[in-house]
Image 1 (cartoon, rainbow, N blue to C red):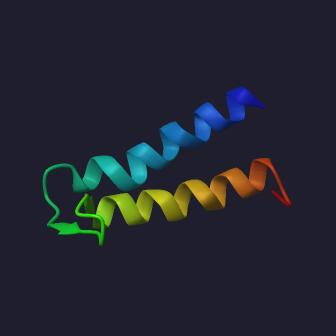
Image 2: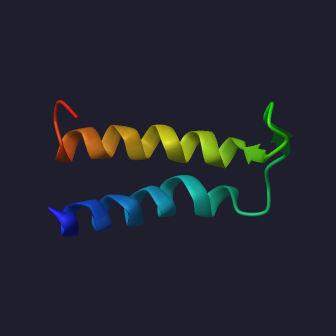
Length: 57
């Protein structure tokens, strides 16, 4: 299963992070930390892919 997770992370990185690399605006969360559109897209995509690997989790 670890191989499936690693593969999912690689796919998401290629699809969500690399196309946006150094091209997105940064925003601040309530705690002052930064996040970007790429962060949000990556989180959504990884959640979707991990649910395929670990249904019901």
